[in-house]
Image (cartoon, rainbow, N blue to C red; front, side):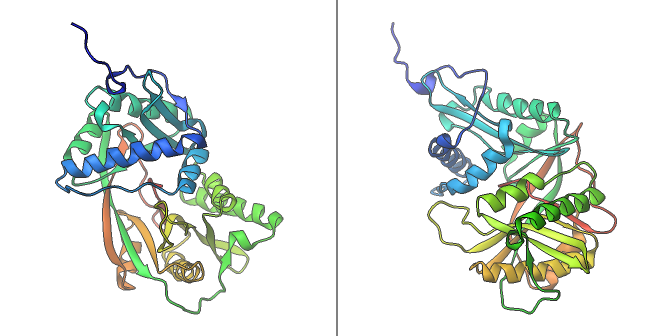
Length: 327
């Protein structure tokens, strides 16, 4: 007896292909369907995850380069994707998703393993991801792939209000091109003192090139004391600017980190956003306390997980390091 075959039952290619900018509309559809289904399974019926801003996808795809992978069905539809990012020896994956109709076929294991293999091959000593802490299925799945739970990442927000900052606000994107390159190198040197091997230069340059936001710089005299990579572009497609998101932050001391928060707030106001969102890893307890003390509110939590063989080091004894493992 003949059976009707649809693209939902088509074989899926074993070998991934590199994601291109032209794939963004289809990626958005898979992303929305997969995460909306995840919320439904968690009991949040009726929640529809919106499409992401195409510029945010470009940032992720161009930043990950060959680590941006997708798998197609025999008929060419996108079945799954995984964007594996490498920043020096820091590696992480996200977003990644399998189309709901094609789940329970082992495809999730395939795309996670492909990401791990890529990051290992690139020499990463840390390989991680973030997932929703209430979702037992996700945590169990990643645990079976060798990932171990770490601290929560807590998203806090504070209002962008007019305030005098001292020293004056300095933005990477406002510097002369030659000076900009020198300061990016200074940012890399500062990061290396806190976490040898990690390298965020590509993210800083891409943010500037795509006009997604800017990097807020804090100098003590002529020495770079802290910096924060921030995105002001809306995360969701078609939305207005509402908040400035801090993706990366490095500070030589707690005092420098706290001073930097004021500068970030001033930049948020100038960028036309209402508030600042900072995703604080749970082991950055001193910065977390400083944010709460300035009136920041807890908005969201994610569970940080790292491969057991490739763990994330602890926070530096002095200074602060935040690295967002989501786009």
